[in-house]
Image (cartoon, rainbow, N blue to C red; front, side):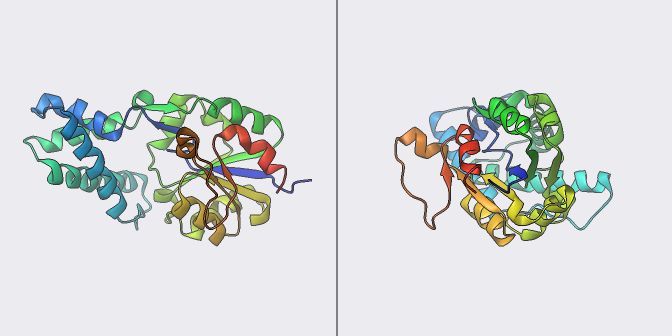
Length: 244
């Protein structure tokens, strides 16, 4: 019988995703500032976002006051979005634009659950497992979860800006474990990033599961390297957890 008592999930890219792409949302809000949408601009924006997000420092801040934490989160994202448009073309009134797009991603409008997410979470919860989130998302995540209708399914939510640690650092995983009073071998972490989710969980000695929907979309089922349990959708999780 599996000893697993808790399943942790990454948030964006694992439970839900941006509707369309980040570039499409950015361009939609930039239209009122004179930015034209073309196929070339969309491709450039998506590429610039991936690069800017990858190059950004971890979202960890040396403050404890909730107001200061939110201010730091906003500045962190301001630098990323500014970096994106610095690469593809800056425009007037960027500060006003950023405020609009930052608020837009703070609700459910531009996010969508993966088709199996709700059913999978309810099934796991109904089987007696505790559920948690470990994410490098910011405090806007709480409103997104509520808007998507899944907030009540989670016993805990641990995010980097409140934990003072970001994945893949083991500290954020250890803090999440403490909230459930379980040992690492009694917990599973599921995420879509080999670097942040899989390696982070391994460093903290949790069971790691990689979700790779692109593998399913491409029809390829290549083994991961290094080997790690890999699923195409969250529907496969109960059967996998039973073997741990």
